Length: 194
Ligand SMILES: [Zn+2]
Image (cartoon, rainbow, N blue to C red; front, top):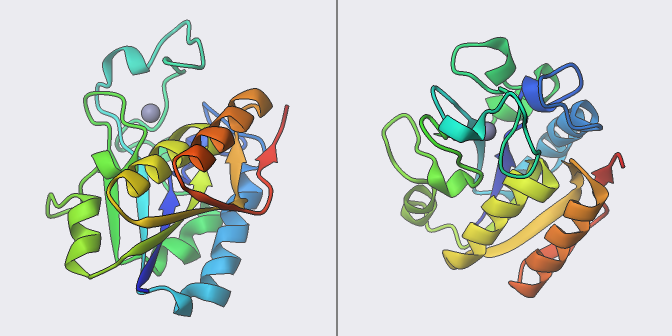
């Protein structure tokens, strides 16, 4: 089965020192690069997603609830929106980058588009890819949403939890239950701070 690796939102703002830092993000970034070097040959393609905000409305808030609203993050053309340096080796192996969320919240990479405006689902189908492994940040938000959409789109979907970091333990546990219930395969253990 032709398989792709989807690297979700491993950007500076989601790693230590960023405006919406997820503990363990930088370690996950480095681990993804090691994995891509070791296992890259198992994949027909590696692709990446990026949160990419111009004016995402209520997704950004001065009083974020950390459920539906968040501190300002991943503003286009700021260092926070750049890929974390430790994940750059994996990004350099990527065939395409799917950016999402210019004018509204977009948690799933399947809401994004590549430089040619192509959706992730179309891009994968054009390459006859049938299965995806999903890694990145955050387990309980954009990894969750991307994996759910991948399964919904008919791809055999697995989340490699050792290569994900979660915002919080309760929402990560809920995400894993939801993923399991939708037929998403889970391997490993997510990094969760609290
Ligand atoms: Zn965002």
